[in-house]
Image (cartoon, rainbow, N blue to C red):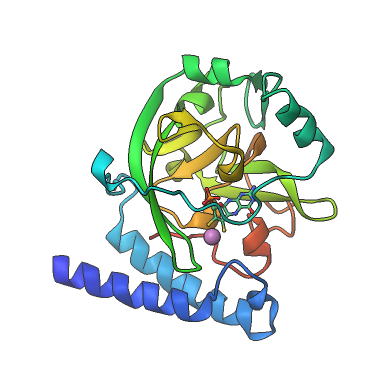
Length: 251
Ligand SMILES: Nc1nc2c(c(=O)[nH]1)N[C@H]1C(S)=C(S)[C@@H](COP(=O)(O)O)O[C@H]1N2
Ligand SMILES: [Mo]
């Protein structure tokens, strides 16, 4: 089983790295979305066999923590809303939580700290071919979903970010409810025992232990509980997915 598992994993990662050259726009070329589309079907089917929804991502020790957690993608959102919050050290920050919930809420970092929190040392893998191990501290997303009374009929959680990739196109991502309620899925406010630094997504970002780098949305402004993401962005569930990346980015 172990051999078969690692063989499949290598096969998947090989396919993924051949066709996904990085967090750039190569996938906008005409062959990109087509090839990715095929690989996604395979990846999702194989992944479903390998990783039941309760499988845990590997956790590491303090000794494994990378000395520098390389920042990538946006490292300083340039929107006025973000700049204003940053100027006041995010004291006025509130995460908006809405969509299919019975009690929409605006949650400060202190509010989030009062819900169930967790610290975990996990590895981040970017499709550009680098990894880093960090110690994340955050609130369980499942605790937030319970707090706002998420509708059991909902299927996805969408993460809206402060940074714009193009004019009026903020970064966004999504995960399904299983991934959202997984015990290693955090809204992280701390990295390596310090408040989350701006380059890594201050004041709050998503950490999903079992997914690739681009799923780990930084600079969260709002999370939205939905039944489908048809009306969000171009309807593929994330900024990079709209450019042709896979929505299911399991590692
Ligand atoms: N809001 C936002 N989230 C984002 C990105 C981004 O550009 N904007 N880049 C993604 C990518 S491709 C990676 S690899 C990770 C990088 O996280 P880091 O800066 O902490 O290394 O953030 C992801 N989340
Ligand atoms: Mo990435």
